[in-house]
Image 1 (cartoon, rainbow, N blue to C red):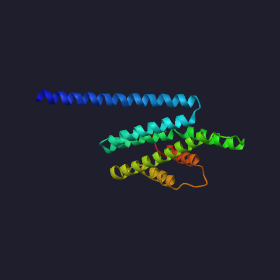
Image 2 (cartoon, rainbow, N blue to C red):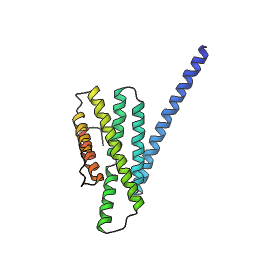
Image 3 (cartoon, rainbow, N blue to C red):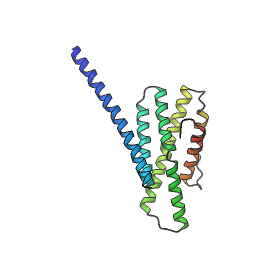
Length: 183
């Protein structure tokens, strides 16, 4: 019987090791893919990869047991969202230039970009809401709490006349300039 217990614990340890290794590899591949798509000037693909990185960080946070580990992973997801600023700028500029030059944009590509931007908004809402909850329960004196609350509040109060990309850009710029360690 003790041999079985040892074998099961050893097997569980190997599975945890494989999981950690897989997570590290996926983070490395996402990082390389983001760099490559940025260099090739493919904003939709770059945004999609960043959203996948955000989802991975959220998944890790959901599996974390301590509030500190959850907070760290949600902050990682928030930093990935902030790294979407140049992509959003690129998308917004290309849309404005196309309208000024009266160029016909591919409908499918534009709807894909709009869909990805909407997904970024949803993920950002979830991340900010989760961070506010954790800060409120675990660390009420956190200097991050007022910034996160204001960011979440302004995310919910979207101006219908303003493009979603520029609305998200202003929120992400506010967060990146007021929260230490998020860039």
